[in-house]
Length: 86
Image 1 (tube, helix red, strand yellow):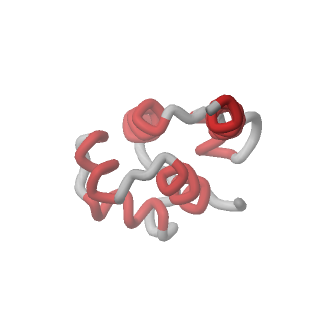
Image 2: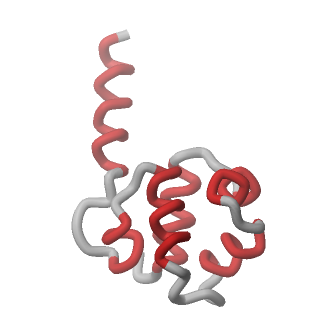
C-alpha cells in the first residue's frame, strides 16, 4: 500500500468500520475520511492521525509512512489462533 489513504482504507475495512463509524469515533465528518482515503487530503492534521490510529488500534507511523509494523498482523494472528482453539 503506497499511500496513507490506501493504508487507512485497508485498516478501516479490516477493523470492520464504515467511513461514518470511523468519522464519528474520531470526531470528524465522513468527508474527511473519504478525502484522506481518496488522496485529496494528503497530510491530515496530526491530531486526526493520532485519533484514527487510536480508534483502529494501529501504528500511526505505519499509517503515515508505511514503515514499521501496522499493528494489524498481531490481531490477525490472535484471531486465527482463537479460531483453532474452538
